[in-house]
Each structure stands twice: as structure tokens, then as C-alpha cells.
Length: 225
Image (cartoon, rainbow, N blue to C red; front, side, top):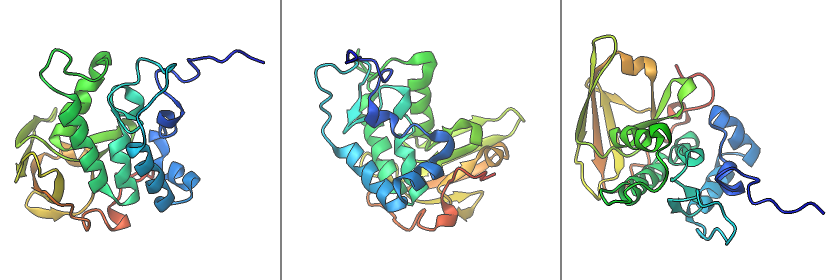
């Protein structure tokens, strides 16, 4: 019998690597048997015991259930919920990760900031969106923590982000306006961001379950551009 290896999964375990299909979330959902089964398993994953056992890799850190914010293979986890129509759950998860695992203490990061990825995740998430699959040109909305942010774009334009009702308990997106017009999608594309302009995000202490309810407003693995 072959000897058991502790490093069958690099800096993670089977639970954490189950979700590492950022290039085809739609296909992953189908493999789970549809949105509801996917959401049920994702809910379980983020609320189950965080016990890793005595032989787990020390690089598995920043745990919420078995979701490990301390390492790159799970950084996209909160944003998966938008692909199945429940973005408010991802918003709460992203906010908890930002609040619990990014502090100004000597051990303020829950993991190794490999080439700045831990920090990049925080900056994107604090602005309110994250490139789950950077190659797709799609950024998924989450739970902004900044009140204001200006992004100076390479084409000379500026994207101004203003967040209304920002606060510790207001972790859910109630509504979004893009250049003064209601915006119902739970994602925005790179091409849209390059246009610059004004983005207004209104927050709430309770989920607006109508935001992102319609399937036409979900991100997908199909080109959303």
C-alpha cells in the first residue's frame, strides 16, 4: 500500500480545491446538478467545522467553515454566489473576511501576501467588486467598505465610486446606479469600467433579494462583454 502523503493538495485540501474552477463556474454548477444543489453545497462549505485535523498544511488559514481566505485558491469563493442568484450571501462572506482577517495588528493578514494577492483581494473587495476570473473581463459585485474611491484609468478617464449608507452593519448592496441610471446586474465588465463615469452603490443592513434575482443579471462563464 502506498504511503499516505500530506501534500496531495498544495496548501489546501479537497474541500477548498473543489471550487477552483474560475474559468467555468457555469460548468461547475452543472456538475453539481444545478443552482440549488450548488448553493446548498456552498452554504455547507462556508458553515461547516473548521477543524482541519492534525496533519493539515499550515498554509490553510483564515477559515470560515472550510473557506480559507488565507490562500489564493479560495479568494473567489464569496463571489461564486452571484453565479447562482444569491449575491447577498457572498456579500456577507466577503465583508466577514475583510473585517475578521485584515486588521492593523502585527499579524494583520490571515495568510502570506504572495506577490500582493492578499492585499489586491482586499482593495478590490473594499471597492465593491472582484475579478473572479480576470481573463473574462468580468468583475462581480460584493460588499464595498469604502465610502468613496476614484480610479484613474489609463485612457485618461476617471471612474468615481460613491457608496451611500456605508456602515459596519450595512453589508448588503441595495441598489446600484451607473451614470445616474439604475443598474441591475451583479457584475460589471472591464470595458464598462474603462468608460469611466459615476457609480453609486447604496447599502442596506438587510439583503435586497431582488438585486441579482433575474438570471439575465447574473455573471456567467459565457462572455458577458
